[in-house]
Amino acid sequence: MTKRGTFAIALLAATALTVTLADARPLKWARSGDALTLDPHAQNEGPTHAFNHHLYEPLIHRDFQGKEVPALAMSWKITDDPTVWEFKLRPNVKFHNGNVFDADDVVFSIDRARSPTSDMKGAITSIESVTKVDPLTVHIKTKGPNPLLPNTLTDIFIMDKEWSEANKATKVQDFKNKEENYAVRNANGTGPFQLISREPDVKTVMKRNDSYWGIGTFPMQITELTYVPIKADATRLAALLSGEVDFVQDVPVQDIERLKSQQNLKVNIGPENRSIFFGMDLTSADLKTDNVEGKNPFADKRVRQAMNMALNRQAIQRVAMRGQSVPAGMIVPSFVNGYTKELDVLPAGDTNAAKKLLADAGYPSGFNITLHCPNDRYVNDEAICQAAVGMWGQIGVKVNLVSQSKSIHFPLIQRNPPETEFYMLGWGVPTFDSEYAFSFLYHSRADKYGSWNASRYANPEADKMIESLASEVDKAKRDATIAKLWALFKEEVIYLPVHHQTLAYAMKNGFEIPVDVANQPKMKYVAFKTN
Image (cartoon, rainbow, N blue to C red):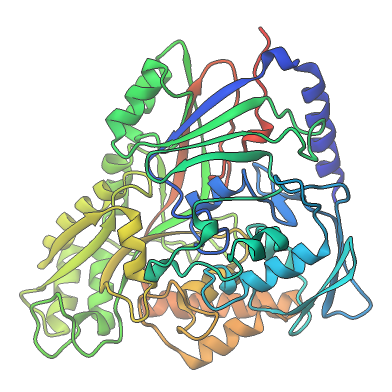
């Protein structure tokens, strides 16, 4: 643990001691969409993680700036065997039902997260086994030396083994096939809040966990936390302006200045570790939603280049995003190891050149295609898609836009085979390393890899390079492999980057919620002002 991390924890402790219980109060938190599930291993999706971090905890979590800090693990190190990490667990921790947390729960939970129906398995593909050494010590053996293992554990939540067995929730929910288990609507974690009631897509109520190990370390001034998904932007902001809710994520960019002008409100703005892009079916022999018989236009790189050139990212930034984005030439932001300004260069926008590329590819009049887009997940997602549709129309690609809730949109991408041929996706990188994006988005679909790769892209040589990153300990060699992969993927135009996302949080005066780089507001850090 760094000196910076130690200082941050000490500062939080001091803050907590200056705020009396009389200042504690409930808080209502609204955003555009709900958590998809409470099963902590069923969906690798940002809002789902952000919500579940309040009920469950990983061994290691990240602060607002993305720095690793201890959670259920007090310390971690590589043993004399370079393939074995040792984690010393936090003592005197209890689950919400009173069960004692120990190594058995860690072994159970990580094995559960590695299971076939888990959407988290792709984050921990390097793990070979998890072993209990004693009640507060766990060894994690990897398939080869993996110096980045702790980076992959920040969203791997720990469940109560006894509770899971008693409630027949040992198997992870198969979300894409609409299965359910007890953990989907119930929770028993070690987190700072305890579940009271759950009404999916309506309201979820949690109360402060007064037995939380972090009391005295974190402010913990929220007595009751109510999470309210409000899909419509106008309705969500009206709830804030009327005082019905206290804190709003997913602030529409067109309303930021209006909210800033309100004396009783404040708006915090900051960058997010997330990039927005479009994916296409690159390999199917024929597409179902186009008007071209017996061919797949996306299989021709010239078509992908033309569509990339047609995207006017600066116009999207200016009009759809009101300046609240950073136009992108690659699909990871500057926080991530492997990012370079050279790779993040935007393609030259040239409508005539794009039309010529389409003609050279055999589509002088363009073609028709269907685009799937979420309307409740990313900042102005539907507006971005609408703008892009118009831009592609200028080169003859006529796009039928289908906008729908993320709960419908994401399964289209995740099913195998995927059920979309052209789609929007946003991707965050919780490990802050390119290997995470490669494993989920570029590796061919195989076992624990490629679960979000609806492009159908498959390159055996690239797969081998991606897999090597999990065990390569020579940083220079590893970074060279990452650079080679990014150069290959950019040349092949696997995805069409749009921008790196910027976030705005709006809240009542009287408390401070900084923008979290992972867009995971952590309410245990919130302390209300006393004056």
